[in-house]
Length: 190
Image (cartoon, rainbow, N blue to C red; front, side, top):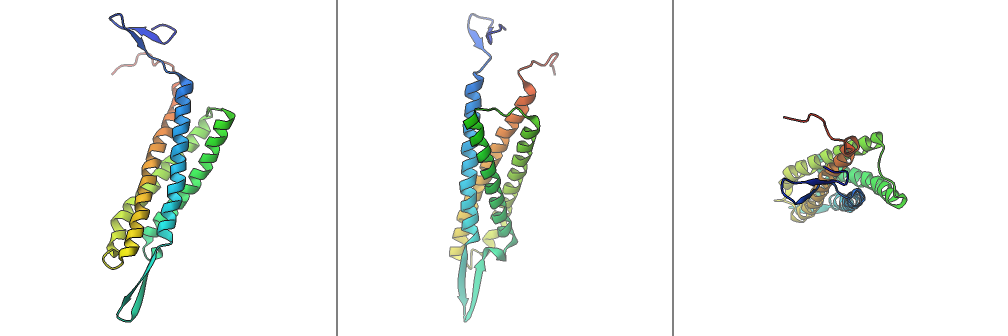
């Protein structure tokens, strides 16, 4: 392989092994920013949808009020989405400052901190959505409107959890790229 990033194939076709690092870096930053904004918006939406949901049902002369605090799993969902939105807001500010300054993340401790935070938030949001989807539908036979709004909140939280998983993949890429540095591994074999 030459120093220009162009190798020679067994035929006469040039093989390109390099990429434009600045273009890749910019695309990763934009993808991270978009995902963090999605998490921020939909996390707030999910927390508000579930947190403000109530329905009163009258059985004979007794009124029974359903609210999210009646089920611990819905409280966990609201808290998890609130935490994800707050964490994402902090990270959005970091991303915007990084893009304005034009700096690249080169600090390994900061990259590890971001990677760890993204992993924790991904696990928490996935667990909250899974638990809420499994348990929250028990009240659907009695409280239809309540169940519909909780379902919308769970759908928003599901998108948040998928976005957190994708974001944790991006932060893993960013972190482990700091260790690669383009150096070839010598004697790499099976």
